[in-house]
Image (tube, rainbow, N blue to C red):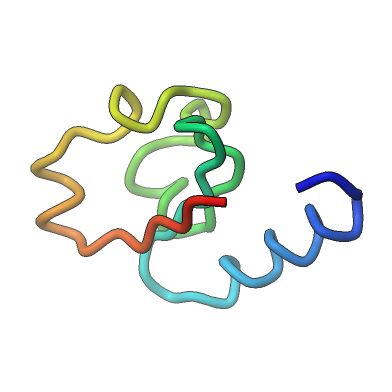
Length: 68
């Protein structure tokens, strides 16, 4: 995501999803929607995705992870 407009569009896209969703780039959590913030907290932004989300949560809650 290079331009601010891309960043806003990506955020709007995942906020439209009801289930928890993340946008990951280079293995780092870049964006998260309301469902992901509720489940994991807001502090996961900027963390390595493998550390930020325990695997059992991914499987139990059906995360949509979009790697860009």
